[in-house]
Amino acid sequence: MIQKRIAQWAVMAVAVPLAAAGARRLSHSLEARRGPTGVSRLLTKGADLLRPQKAKRRRFF
Image: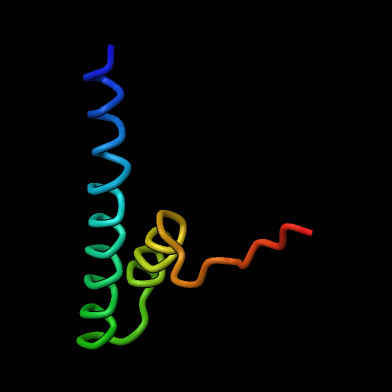
């Protein structure tokens, strides 16, 4: 049971940010070659959904 939790944590901590960075990099390279397309916008939106560039500041009071 604990090994399953460690595996889930590893996926969330490593694989998801890597996937977001890869999608963002691929969208930038596609836009550089062909200009903005639907696919490049979709990749950027997906990367923003997985890991936004700017995190909102939380106010505690």
